[in-house]
Length: 138
Image 1 (spheres, helix red, strand yellow):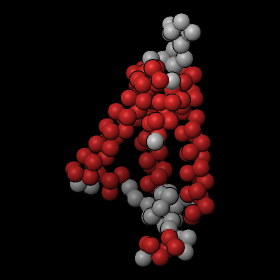
Image 2 (image 1 turned 60 degrees about the vertical axis):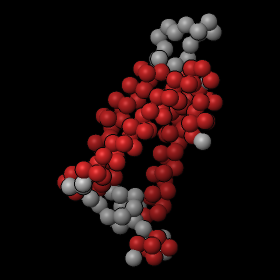
Image 3 (image 1 turned 30 degrees about the vertical axis):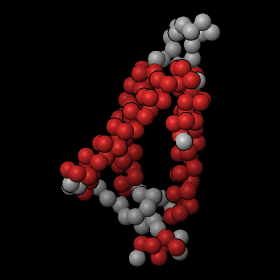
Image 4 (image 1 turned 135 degrees about the vertical axis):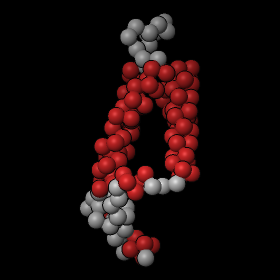
């Protein structure tokens, strides 16, 4: 089955160009993720005396980031359902039929991720964003 197709390099069931397409998508996503921390640090920078004239506070940064995720997720999910990186295409209707437990696990994972991100941003104002980000990725 599925494992044998993976060993032959044919995991993708009609998605984004097979393994090469998935690798490109993952590489581009990694580059985009790598841009977040320096851009966030730039947005949250303060004056040498610690004042903040027009910069984002950690919770403001988290709010904007979460808003962007909420706005872009429907289109991203629709694309990944139509052209999956692995497996066969699916629909929102199939997603809606998942058990409440499956949906709860997704919400729990998102909540854990959000707490980690906010903790990272809050500690970054004390430790420095580069160190805080590195610890958060460990």
